[in-house]
Length: 223
Image (cartoon, rainbow, N blue to C red; front, top):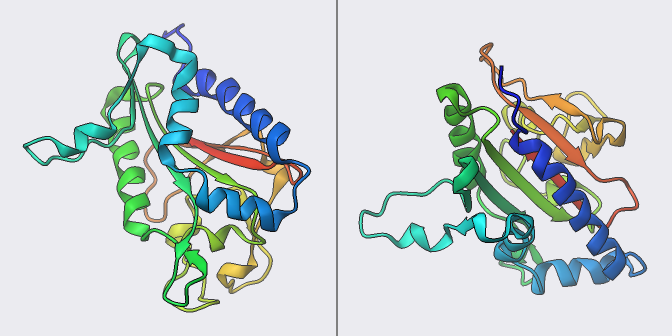
């Protein structure tokens, strides 16, 4: 029996402190102003450093490793060598779209690669030592404004079941559901939620959704 603390136990308190930090900075601002701050002031490295900070000298940030000569992708941003913890981080924000509004988001493939990495690591004997963290400011009406959850393009595409299953904290308000019908279910916050992949009955990983409707920042920890 493994009696050592697992990666999610370390990350839970760390992420809650980060939420508290952002609440103290921005909780009294309107969402439109927080949206501007989220898109223009912060990037992924800002979140990585905050997550890695409690580990102090044990934390190695592998962002630059993606430029190695062998060109192989490093599927984690933070490595805690003494504990063999590997953490991948994604920060959700919008970029300028063709219409010059801050509404564009990263391609889904970027996230799928990280979900696939975590599943492979979990099933390779590293459960409890690997995590994929998604963080975002709670500044838009729908989560789907920050990440592509549709089956196709357009303002209101049909929600993809294969994508939705990765976010068990989102509830459908209609069936069939459009991406705009997926809303936060805060009753699922702060508790382990299984990620049930379509067509896969083997052991996978859990999701821990952190945040409430009044929090400025949210996290989803996959482990």
